[in-house]
Length: 117
Image: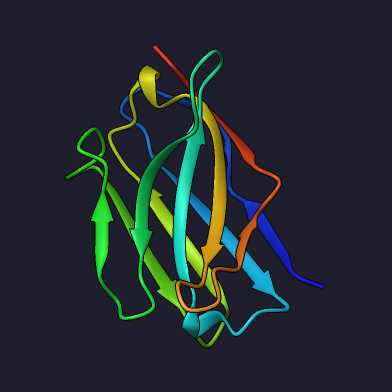
């Protein structure tokens, strides 16, 4: 059974920081691209950052220079360090695991991030 369990969300003031974690089980973690997505109320889910199985990282323009995605393959965990948070970063953040060879695609349950002004 595949599980992606996010943690680390919460309420923070603008300019503050949070670190999200996503612990994966039931998959061969190192072979998956790991990504963070977010969905704000009334908006579509959008890609925030991805860390590929080869170690390449990509970011949405809106978070470049503020967010950092990293992974620890020994711990089957992907992280999202979020600095200089803005109210517009408020959303539910979802962890995603995607294998581009098998096309298997899994999602976590989401964690709420709220940034107050």
